Image 1 (cartoon, chains in turn purple, cyan):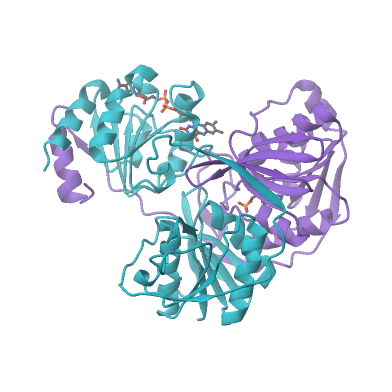
Image 2: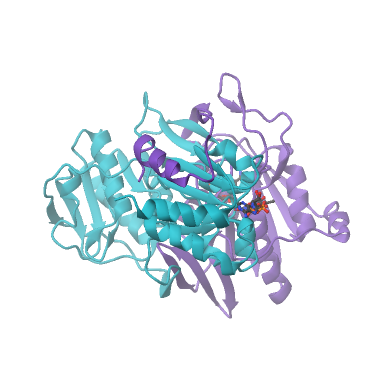
Length: 246
Length: 310
Ligand SMILES: Cc1cc2nc3c(=O)[nH]c(=O)nc-3n(C[C@H](O)[C@H](O)[C@H](O)COP(=O)(O)OP(=O)(O)OC[C@H]3O[C@@H](n4cnc5c(N)ncnc54)[C@H](O)[C@@H]3O)c2cc1C
Ligand SMILES: Nc1ncnc2c1ncn2[C@@H]1O[C@H](COP(=O)(O)O)[C@@H](O)[C@H]1O
């Protein structure tokens, strides 16, 4: 089986979020970057598990500049076989999806796996767009994936529950919680990742159809009003009369 | 602006998320938006009530997002729409990006309000910041974050026009559905009130006091990740960065420390109440109201106080 996993660079979950250049770009100073958690723990690990069980190869693909290389090496250390980086500054999901779809179009991957969303852009868009560019089925928010001969059996999140879904041709999915568990790379993985191939593909930056004109931080909450533990009725009164919520 | 909105239908009626998308479309079009639906619909499915007067009705329900995308694209070109609106619910998130590719449009996901100076506001960094997005293409596809704009009822009735389009074959089959809330209660992402508890509850046997409070408030229950991981509560109740994101009007956190990954899933709640024995718990910094106290004493009293309200 030939699998392609889309991995994106994301700020560590505990990063302080701030902006520079007149609130037009993310302030990366002091920020630690990680593999986007959904891409790593769910899409990548499940892809590696399938290859370990049934043979084949896992390639990761990232749209980004050289600052993505450390997180790509981490994916190789976890167990991906090859990595590709499309050298471009990603501006929006459309551009990322088109670049990935162009790359994948003549390589007949059986499954293209994305995470359910990036934790910085939160678009949940790239997977569906790749599927549309390649005219492939798209299975969003997949929580389980099993291969049974030529058929793929999945479960995916839907309103109020989960659906079983079956597909018989190559497809794109976005991976959600449930697919697999996080894997910590071991020393051998980390050593071998250094020599695994990371291919850089030249590209242009165009293709984006949107851009962010400004970021803003939410107004900081007023101080929390503390209510005496012996007097929960006071809390009820505030929720009713001040917050007008109950 | 010529606007088309895709309205999701369930059991013959527009879903709440669909009506919210329709309300948004109506607002940005100045009352001239057209809706497109797929599946059997009773009367106008409630769509006229939010101010839409024309509905293009495709008679069969479609399960493959590629088919819905084709349907919406054909509808958009029929009405000459330059803007197409979806809900950013589970279905919309799969269909809207496809439509954007088909129409060569710019896609803005998870919009939280009307455009300001032509720029669409949306949450980024898991709710820790907002971005204003400008579309540089001729056409625009947007999806609306559920519960962010609201349903605006204006009264009225929509005319249905039978509509057909070449949508192709379904390339996937959808089998058995398993509800996550066995009792049929409101799915968490749609809940208006949520009572949530963490490791401070000490064990699964203590959840009675959490459920009692949720019952009197007509709220859904949620939990922190370790509680789900330890099997104290079902996994689908886990909220946060690796669980689900919720935006209720009221979020009551009981015995939860307020780690940043937990906050990522709940910090868009309108009002946050925190009950924790530790006055230094980080959650108080994100809260509107707090009680420094023991959940085993506070929760039953709070439940009683709410019972005595009316
Ligand atoms: C990559 C990553 C992703 C993560 N994703 C998530 C996520 O999606 N969701 C999530 O929730 N966590 C997530 N976590 C875990 C998160 O960092 C915290 O560990 C977790 O949220 C803590 O859960 P808790 O508040 O229930 O437990 P604790 O941190 O142990 O806090 C328990 C709290 O209860 C209080 N308490 C104790 N006894 C009482 C009492 N009798 N009455 C009142 N209060 C009491 C304590 O003072 C304490 O504040 C993630 C972590 C990582 C690294
Ligand atoms: N720059 C990128 N390079 C590779 N994959 C990406 C990139 N951005 C997003 N993705 C993939 O698309 C998914 C959804 O991203 P998004 O649409 O930004 O929420 C992510 O979980 C990744 O799998």
